[in-house]
Length: 165
Image (cartoon, rainbow, N blue to C red; front, side, top):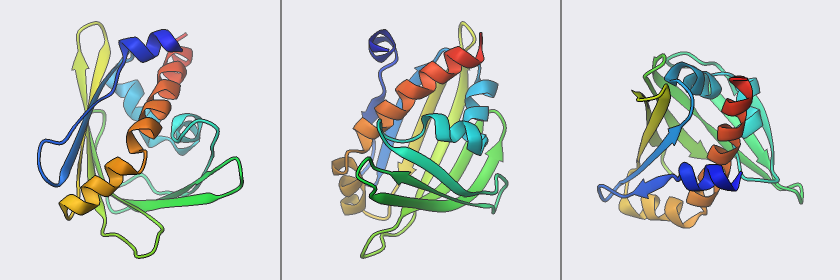
């Protein structure tokens, strides 16, 4: 997978005080990449940091539908994430609220993902997450989000290669 790491680096930027933007190229068409985001069984194969188990508790993939999943660490610690789907336009756009269980409970952020068809049957995935405040944005950046995202996307690269064989 090291070759995929070099070729498909996730670029993370902060275009505004309350936003995190990511961009990555996947060697698969937008329809297939989108499907990997929309199917809860497929999601468990790639989403989450290396070494963590993922369980989907709820995934009502429609506008207004709720989702909830857990990442379970090797030591058994559980991290709970939840939100609602806002807009779904297969295979070009997906937006949802995003949150996680902690005290005090932070406000929801809004995740927007655009699946852009590029040359060679590939997809440029651009995500923008908007937070209530700069402090919330900075807290997410300091949480290890970038490493977890890269580990997830590396697994997604492998899954997409397998699905296209």
